[in-house]
Each structure stands twice: as structure tokens, then as C-alpha cells.
Image (cartoon, rainbow, N blue to C red; front, side, top):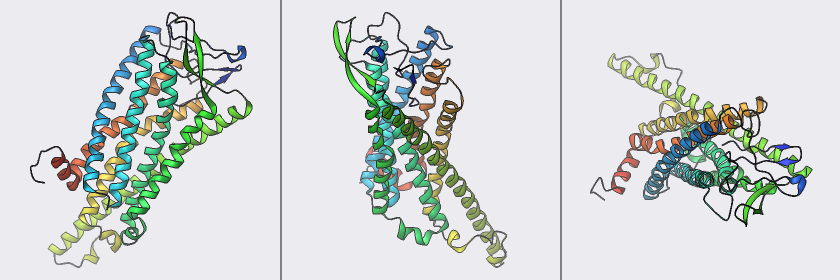
Amino acid sequence: MYLHLIEEDNTTRYPAMDQMTDNPFHLWEDHSKGSSTLTLASGILSDEQFNIILLFIIYTSQLINNCAIIANSLIIAVYVKLGFSEPSNISLTALAICDFTLAVLFTWNNLGIWLTYHNVRLPFHGANVSFLTGGAQSAFLSTTIAWITAFISFERCLCILVPLKVRRLITSRVTFVAMLIIVLLTFCPSFFIYIRYKFIWVFNPYLNVTILNTTSLNNEFAILFGKIYILICGVIQPLLAFSIVLICTVLLVVQLRKISSWKLSVTSAQSQRVQPEENPAGSLSAAEARVSQKEERLVRMVVAIATIFIMSYIPICIGLLCDVLIDRFNPYGVYSRIYIVSGYIVSLGQPISGSVNILIYYKMASKFRSAFRRLVRLDRQE
């Protein structure tokens, strides 16, 4: 779901699913009166339509999350078995760890909403607390995944363009440090959200108990910080990473076609006893032509990973643009329920991408395939 902060008439509102009036967890909080508010505009969809659609999406999301958790657990186990002597193993493992963590965070967020919808009595508000401890972090972790994918794509571009130099520049240590820097700059800032949002204890008159809920600060610094924070971490960073992945993927596809044309022309020239320099792809540099078959397979695998990432991230980019350009397209505007439903739908792309990666590795990476088969006992040889 999109991470969105709304301030209106000195009232703080929270992204959460619609609550019925007889819901014991339906808390109304108005900061102007010393309390807090949890509310949601009715939007276009009716109560019944909204609840049915959202629950269906949540159940579907959880099925995909379960697949992502299993798939990425296997990916991590395989790469641990293979070792980290190759830089690509480090970056692909980091990607799998992030995909695994993202699926866990989505699971926790779905669980909180499910518990709230079914009026399960808890010492905390399930939807609000799970959003602040899971849903919000998942938005930033998606950016981390985007930047790791951008690094992998950029590194493969260098391997194609300057293969002799890149091996000395991008070592295992450099890749490990790069992964740490990406996590520090993209995911760790998610904890700054607690400067803007706080946990509070609120009395629930339906249960006659005090439960844990969330609220936000309304001072000028907090509001300004929240706007700058979301602009940088929620819009600029993911769109920039997406642009890098898109550009690098296009370059990789172009270079792969050049290399394939060069190899085809050389083979044809040799069969006709003609000098290779006479081939029509002579514009290809010698460095580009010296890409080994192993490197070429790895590049093709990265192109497949990046392509799936691009397909899964395009809806998120469209959602971010609609969030900025369309008035009242937010959790509390005229299109509130459409906003929430579409937010959950586009968020499905990330766990789907994380689930499919294992199929790409298995099909296109021979070492991964061999290690995977030994891990799940498909091959008896050690």
C-alpha cells in the first residue's frame, strides 16, 4: 500500500480498512480534543463490495507471500551452499533476503487487518499497529529491492562494456559494502517514521480496556519532516532506482543482440573463409566480443530478473504518479476505497517477482541448479 500522510483540519487520520459502526475496534480520535481519529471516507465502493474485494486481495496476497517466503528461503540456502567468492552471489543473496523480509512484513500487515476485520480482541489495534510496524517498512524495503536490482543491472552493464576492468573494480568486498550502503540509505530511514508517528494507549469503551494504537504529531516540524521524508524516500528514490534498472536493462539487451550478431557473423565468415573484420557487426569492440559464455548466461539471467522487476514495478510507479497528480486520490478522499484496493493490488507485484526469481535461477544458472537439486535431494551426489 502507498505510504501516505494526510493532515486535515488539525485531525490526524490513519490508513486502515473500513470499520463498521459496531466494530469494537472502531476508534475515533480527534487531536483537537486530546484524542485521535481513525476514519475512512466511504468512497465509490459500497461497504459490502469493499470488504469482499479487500478480503479477497488479502487472501490472494498471503498465498503469494507464502510462495515468496519458501522460494527465497531456498535461494538463500543455495547461495550459502555455493559460497560468496563471486560478487554476483552476494548481490543475489541480498536480493533474496530482502524479498523474504518483504513477504514476512506483508504477512504481518495482512494478519493485522484480518484480525481487525474479524473483531478479534487484542491488546492493540491490529490494522493500525501492523501498518506502522509492517506496512510502512515494506514500502521502504521495496525501494531497497529496487536499488539492489539497479546495482545488479549496472554491474552487468559494466561487465559487458568493460569486462577486463570491472573484475578488478567490483570485487566480493566491494559488492558486500555496496549492499550495506543500499540498505542503510533506503531501508534504515524507515525507522524515522517514528518521529512522525507514535504509539499511544487508548481507552476502548466497547471492551472497557486500554489498547495500543497509533497517532501522529501535528507540530510544524513533524508535518514538514513528513512531507520531505515521503517525497525523498517514497517518490524520488524508487523512481530513480526504477529508471536505472530500465536504462541498464535496455543497454544489456542491446549489447546482447550485438554480441549474438557478432558471433553469428564470425561463424558465417569462417565457414566462407572470409576475414572476421569483413563482417557487418564489425563495430562491436573486441572487449565486448570477449564476453565468455558463462558471463553471457549471467547477463541473460540478470535481464530476466530486471524485466520481471520492471513489469512488477510499473504499476507502483503509476500509483505514485496518480497519488501526486490526482486530487483526492488518497485514503480519505473521494476515491479512498479505490485508492486502498489499488494500493494492495499493485503491492502484489513485489512478492510475485520474489517468487518467480527462483525459477529464473534454476533455468539459467547451472551452478544454482546443481546446488538446488543437491539441497532438495533430487541428486544423490554430494
